Length: 600
Image (cartoon, rainbow, N blue to C red; front, side):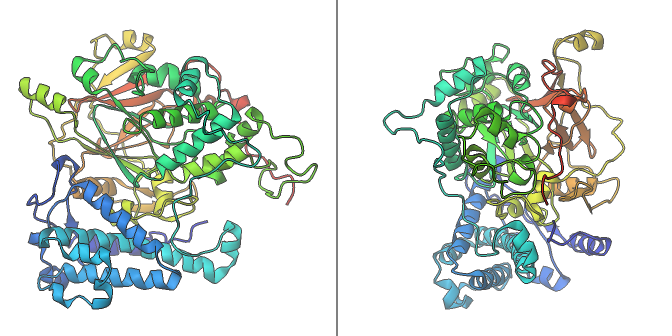
């Protein structure tokens, strides 16, 4: 059910007209920190008059971390609003102030005293003009996203019917979920006994043995507390492994994905992968998982427990973002809820005897662990930025080898881009992610697909790292493809203009090649990695080799497809690793199919 506006052709023409007036800001490096994490700035102008009045030459780049901090302060300010109208007034006021700051003739003394009393505004005004203008641009984009969210809320309020269907009121700013506790049906773990996360990890990785229901509950609760502290966008340095959809295929996760990418760096409980070169042994490889951990496959709980345990043991090495199946509306229907009920049966009579469950959707009672897991899911970040290595040792070795390091800047999400984010990372940071996936930019980032284009005739792939022939490589279980990607090459011009179209999936928008290339160019990025679609070879390049789909669940639903992961080495060189399904644990007959509700 989509209440956000759709992008029609008339709107598309308006957007194209607006985009033609955009100009790049001067990159004078006024930000702090490594420029690997800086965001390129392009400023949209509604008309030539605004363009002439804007002090464009004074806008600077800032590290992404500065914009993340600003977004947290902005959302915190909105949460302080007592009601919807006060929130709406605050957003309007901040948007007006940010627009004024962008003008050449702006004066700090001209700021209204009422808004000037806010610590958020005082901090903004205290910055030097180039930094202040960059922050003001981010606030403009934040306000644009929030205004769309508020319009959606107002529509729900006016109908009442939509509000009732969604089972919640349209109220004030969504809070991050509280630190979830254990259900009354689950005995909490004694504080003195504690939770041995390392033991849980070891049992899962070696024996595929699930923890007790009490341990699982505490594991999910701790993961939720950790995830909700992360921003909408997380940053991860190379070398790293990027993993697509897993869908409860535990054997493939352990025996193919981790075997190909190297052990998860969770302390003394794993060993360094023997095939890593010396430079990557020093820094070790980070892991980025792109969502869809549950549903369809037979071991959703095993995969989820392993990933949450890894996140708790190595929070700065393992990163998890949200997919469209990390939503109760979806994972209620496609296997995860049923698996919770089968692996951890509810006590007799806990569902009110023979009474039908209140929910009429699929005839299954809710499970406490399923509820806890979905609290964790709404806390997952939405996007990741992969940058160059942070290790001083790695940089030193690069220097000794005389290799000039290319600028690595890669964007990753589960689905794709959105027409509601102002074509910027700022817009993604502004999304209120702490609720169910319904519509708007949250749906786009988790549900969107690229508009199909003609496959490129240019192959980026080299032969396998051992130089073997194609037939020999196919005989191997893991087939490796080095990718010759030039990070210094400029983003190409689009060959066609597609813009956005409404997705046939019923959620989100599909996006064209022109959208991808424009987003990359305006945010200083090299290419986009996403998951979400089952592609036959496990990976697929599109949009002039600037958009890579990675799908890591081989033989998905018995389709016979390959799986793949992406390794980005410390040098920045990408390597795709393909693999077949470990066994036939997933077959069409075992896939939970949607069925009509028992009652209406």
